[in-house]
Image 1 (cartoon, rainbow, N blue to C red):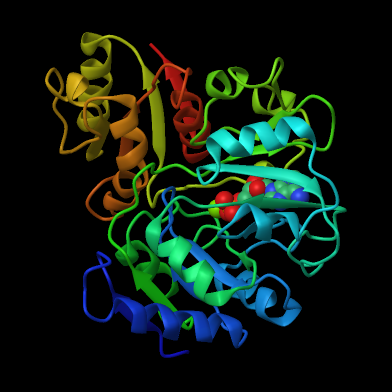
Image 2 (cartoon, protein in one colour):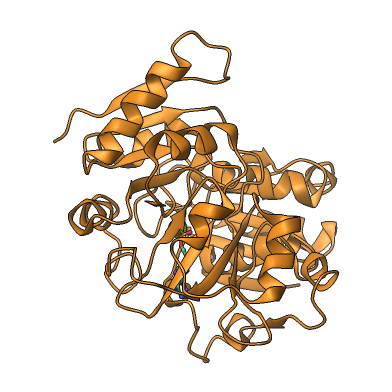
Length: 343
Ligand code: AMP
Ligand code: MG
């Protein structure tokens, strides 16, 4: 067990802001792991140039060794230091979307340790758009490898408490900068060819990208579960809540019938849905994901974590239209669910 430090710095005005970030940065530079907020989810950081430090991330999370990590930096200049070559369309995308929820897969120049890239020739690089992440990265002055700060397989963390629940005692520290905003992870974009390919849908949508590049492809594995995904991490089951989850598409009437039938069998039902659904339905426990699809993205992981074994036997969750950020939401929900019912 490690004694996990926790710094509460919900905003830049708190007195201990600079001191907290200096302590966190010095742990990172010393080869330790520290979790910190980004605009997407909390990341678990380690010095990306230090093989041994990066090993600690895999150990704390129980992450499979063949799943590469994203290197986080504060500036475009720092990003350039990690890669061989940046295609002109990536320069255009970076001008618009970075800092922001997008990861570019580019040929690595070998600066990041080989366990960051899981032995691949490419490296994922991202500039997060969160003041705490940015200030911490500037204070470290090294690239920071940072996957989501959850135990592998569980829903990603969107608050410091989520990180604490999963990793207290296993990591050196958590910087608590409040709840994250976007709520789903970055878009992973393979930029090693002339035409970019979305390997994981995320905070920046295909439509947004297509305003700046003519064609954006989507990894066929995202639509076809039998195809081998190009992002190693996409083959794993992920985001799993404690109890089974059914993703459901239907009318208020058919869904309520499903809930009632399951309750008659003695199952306690947790309902995870937007307010539009909740108005018309009732179950044993209800968690609102808000009104818009952006609200849904923001609250999704907290919702998945809130239903506990013992209280609830089955989660019934609304299926959302798969456009815009809805693509990322549905990608995560399909992985979290054991069934997808179209009633
Ligand atoms: P996480 O940091 O937990 O949000 O996961 C990062 C995602 O990016 C995983 O799905 C990885 O497989 C993917 N990824 C990271 N680096 C690469 C890379 N060099 N090539 C392809 N996919 C990558
Ligand atoms: Mg993750």
